[in-house]
Length: 248
Image (cartoon, rainbow, N blue to C red; front, top):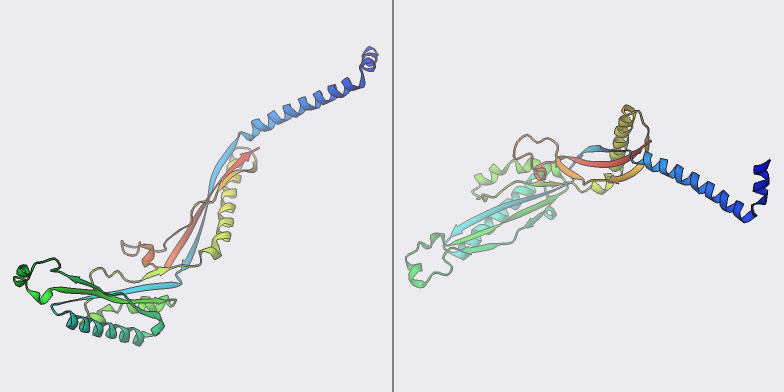
């Protein structure tokens, strides 16, 4: 009864202040508990992988010739280029798939004086580097024909030392990015749920997430040659999602 009389004697404005204080006190207590709980986190990774097939092939067939007469040498190179075109079209490529590479001419004796040139053998003075580029979406045809390079050699065509075969490109990454990120996120969430279960907790909201970088590698690396992703038709796309969850 005395407490009731004392409360009645407190002006209304002070009762309102008292009520607000009580409410704020409860809020800060609750917020403190939340902050203490939210300090518990777990960081997990989720991997997504997908096998893909290259959709474009680029194949540079590089040749060179050596001689002392530049005009004669160029004529021989032109004949070799024609032979390569015939070989490729006969194998099933369209002319639109074939493009000549630029011609590079090297003079071994460039900068020599006339006196020095007289003492040199002019037969191998000039070197011409050139070739043919094949660009095709028929990667299986490129792969099959590129294994027949011995036929060009038997025709007397000199393939340069830096010949490395076709490269194979996958252009469909944008078409699979979203679904792969979803899969990586799902796998990360599953890992987080398992961790929370083992820790006798529950998985809360996401605190932070990092998508990671998409990587493309050879699907079946068996040696130093095939482990080069650029030389592999069959590839594997990978992405790792790193997610930090609150535990509750």
